[in-house]
Structures are given as structure tokens and as C-alpha cells.
Length: 197
Length: 227
Image (cartoon, rainbow over all chains, first blue to last red):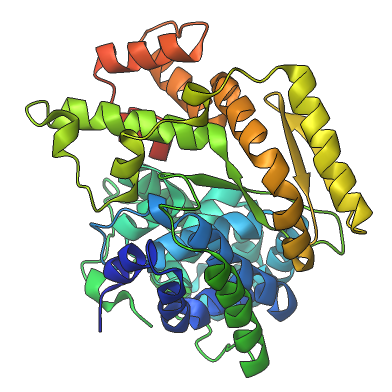
């Protein structure tokens, strides 16, 4: 099977070849969009992502084998066009998310706080995330991208990705009442190969 | 524990698009792909697209942004000169669409300049053609002296038919007004970042970019020369 970059390069002269990229990544794009916006809007985002990608394929950096970060970046920008829906969805899901992650914070928070109150605080912290920080966090968590790929997807330097994720960490730590010890370091994943769903 | 690790377990792997949705998305893509004879003949190399936000009931579609296309071509030349001075233009990869464009003439080089009156008249004709086919343009606005608009994606065939007459004038106009395009705004910003006051026209800005040794690719992609 040809890598994504070869498919894209070939599609410059044989446009229909681009459909192979759709077959590989449409589900992944849909999953990411659906978790952020719900199924209905995700259908549009998925379809539109590939139409935009098709039109922009000449600008693709063909030295990059995996097109998924590029596609998720396009999807993220399209999601911004549903800003109001996304904001409402995030507000609604932050409590549920907080409840899911709270048990992982309990150990570090110690006996100082019960799970329910911790979840409330985490939910409040999540709602405070800026749109850019939220995009970065969700590309990491739900898009399953590493730092370099997030930088590609969001067209920002990798240092900015680190800063944004560190800001999210700080926010969550503060909400959980966890002491910050020492200097923060990047937590970039090394397993960039395992990006494909 | 990395505070973000728990988030990854909230990823919902079970969420899948219904088969008919997948098929519809694929059909839409194939429809676009089969209508496109390939980049060298249709979309100018390095061509950017701009998405248009449309009112409720409209689908977002894309349309070529010629100014960005022309700049991308110019920048390709600049990058090649900067990176491979010994090779010059001849060293560019002939298999890449961008390289084909770097040696071909843009519309602006082969025809007289388009005046605002001509551009507006051509746009009005285009809008009328769409309307005559029962397709109204939505979200019309001026962006950097260029008309921005939307139309229902389902009416793509009408758009293609009507746009043919407008295409060349639109391309020339956008190239002539590239100074206010998104790409040039980024270039001007990057020049300012490195302490250079951008020139007042596109040619001057391009000359400044070339002289300054600005990392064009980074600037265009990231909107900054830092990092």
C-alpha cells in the first residue's frame, strides 16, 4: 500500500486516486469531529475536510508520509466554523469528562478532596481552556497525535504546542490542588508511528 | 502521572460514521475528483483554496484564490533561488505542479490589466448567470478588494458553467490585488517581525522578502519567523 504522500502526489495528475485517502482516514476524521460536535455536524465536517484537502492537495508537503495530522488540522479549522455548537458541546461534556478523569487525580490530590468535588473543579477548569488550548488538547487526546503532528495540524511551532499543553496541565493541577514540583517538561510521545487508527 | 494522560482514555473509539454517510462523503469527493482533469490543467500550481462560510441551508464549498496562487508561484521561485542557488530555476523538480507554473506565464503577464469597472461588471455577469440558473450567491462580501461569496455545493455544475466567463478576469484582479491577500498579510507581518517596514506594493514586499533571507515557508505556514 502506498503511503499517503505518494497517494497525494499521484492525485495531482490522477485526481480520483485521492479517494484512497478518504478510505483510509474518513473514519478517523469523523470520530474526532463527532466527539467534539456530535454526529450530525461531524458528517459535514468529515465530508468537507476531504473536499478542502482535495482542493489543497498541491500544497501538501510530500515529504510527510502520514496525512492524518494534515487532515485533522483541516477538520479542526472546519470545527471552528461551528464555534457556537462546539462551545455548547464542550460546556456540556466537560462535566462528564471531568467525572471520567477525576479518579486519576484522586491519588495525587490525596484525601484533601472527595471525588465529586474534584470532578466539579476539573469541569470548571476545563471550561476555562481557551479555544486554541482546547484544540491542542483534543488533537492530543482524541486525535491521538504526537506533538510534532499537532504542530503540523495547527500550523504552529512545536514550542507553542508544548506551551498550550503545559497550560492545560497547570490548569488541571491547580484545580485538583496538586502542588507543582520542579520545572515542567514536555511530555511528547515518542510513539509517533502508532498514529494510525 | 502526566495530567493529560487520563484524557486519552476518554477517546471514544466506538464512534463510527454510518455506512450511508461514509458513502455520501465518498461520492461527493469522487464527484469533485472526476470533474477535475488534474492539477496542471485546472488548478494553478501551489493553488490555495478558501472556504466560504455560508448561511444555513448552504454547504461550504471552495473556490480558487488566484492571488495566493500567483504568490505561491513567485515564492516557489524565491525558495528555489534561496535554497538551491546553483541550480536556479532549472533545478526545480519538473514533476511537481508548482515547478510547471514557475516557468509559465500568469494571466497578468499576457493580458492588459483589469480595471475595477471590468472586474465589477464581470462579477455582476457571473452573479446574474448564477441567478438565471436559479442559484443565488450567499454571504457576499469584499475581502481585500476581492468579492467573496458562497453558493450551494449541490449547484457546483452551475457554478462551473458560470465561472468560466469570469475566471480569467477574476484571476487577474486577484493577482493585481495580492498585496491585501492572506499570504501577503503574513509576509508583511513576518517582515515587521524582523524589523523591516514592509513596502507599499506587492513587488516591493517580494523584493524585501528575497533580500532579507526570510524563511518564506515558515512564514506562510506558521505566520511567524520565530520558533
